[in-house]
Image 1 (cartoon, rainbow, N blue to C red):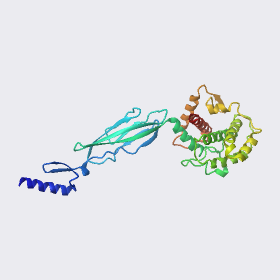
Image 2 (image 1 turned 135 degrees about the vertical axis):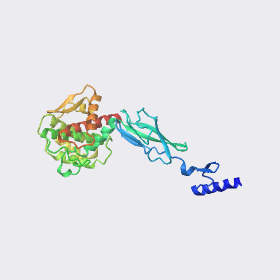
Image 3 (image 1 turned 45 degrees about the horizontal axis):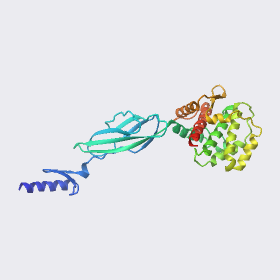
Image 4 (image 1 turned 135 degrees about the horizontal axis):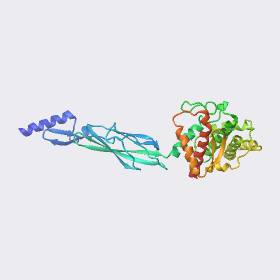
Length: 325
């Protein structure tokens, strides 16, 4: 009689919890545990890609079951300090890496019956140079594009920010045009910018047709420098544009050492005036450029910063292009 009673209770509980013979894991006396209904399932969240130095959140809040504890542990990549490692959400600061790096974290959850489950997530950390390159390309295709009436829409919006090249003094405007042409031409030629170059070439045709900068100072020399790189890009892509550039440069003033800007042996400085200064170590020029671009994240570009950021964009593009060669 006792056996029949237990069998009746067992069958009743099985029906109540919706368990079939395949899902009944343990039966202690009259109690049935159903694997499918009660086991915890860990969810460490989606993989992420972040910049070096960013605050990263690991989110395990989508884990399911009667969870009593969370535990995050790092299983791959350079070691970082986890905050709130015993909570559903943990945070850390991504390391300053020289190349793209992957960090791996494992989340373990335990329920009230001491049953556990684990899941992992990968966090890709971009090197500062890669982040700066992304910023540079966005700015060069947005607020750093020279102000052209025919392309006002293209140069006026990046996250709602207006052009940073409106009403620049003549020498700054000439220098900014040259650096912009150089940066975009080099990015396209070296495959750093894989977007359709047609809009850039349309803008370049307008600039080629504009009057030559009358100045003989650094601003005019930088403008010519940009047209030299544009001509090299157009030599095979657009012969007519190439010829127009050659004609424009026939009477232009040129930089004494144009390769210096591309190699990092020199950089453009703009405080009270525009100057090109020698740099003892090319990595210093790149570090300065990366820092300027990273500082510009999350805000609009003021006119006074347009030339510096355009020069910084050229430097990180040149550095990336050299690394890819």
